[in-house]
Amino acid sequence: MPRYGFVFRIVPELKEDFKKAHAEIWPELKKEIKNVGINNYTHFYRNDGLIFAYFESDDPGKSLAELVKKEIRTKWEIYMDKYFVKDDRSYLGPEATVLEEIFHLD
Image (cartoon, rainbow, N blue to C red; front, side, top):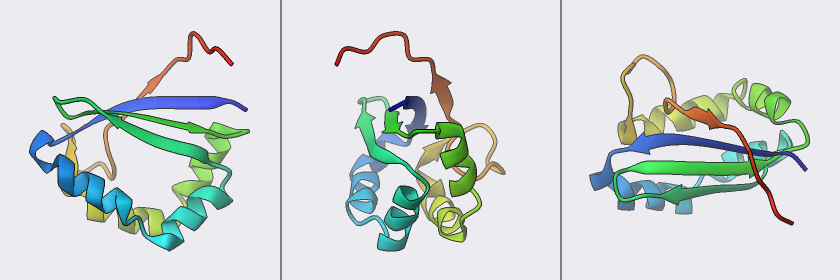
């Protein structure tokens, strides 16, 4: 299954609140993430606020395109906006950089 990785930043001082929000992720959002074909969605944190995010999907582009159409995803991004470090505050969601997979060992 194809893997998809990206990075973005959060305000380091808000790390615990960011973790709590994800520990309490809205059930309807979780359902939609799975419904669009996203699996094993994971975040890793570095002390400067960098988040490495990872998920698997048979078609990551299609899954993401479907997810951004969901009203619950829009509400979640608005709710989470206070955590993101970004240059363009008018952009909904984190300013993410997609990473190229260069190695994988099964």
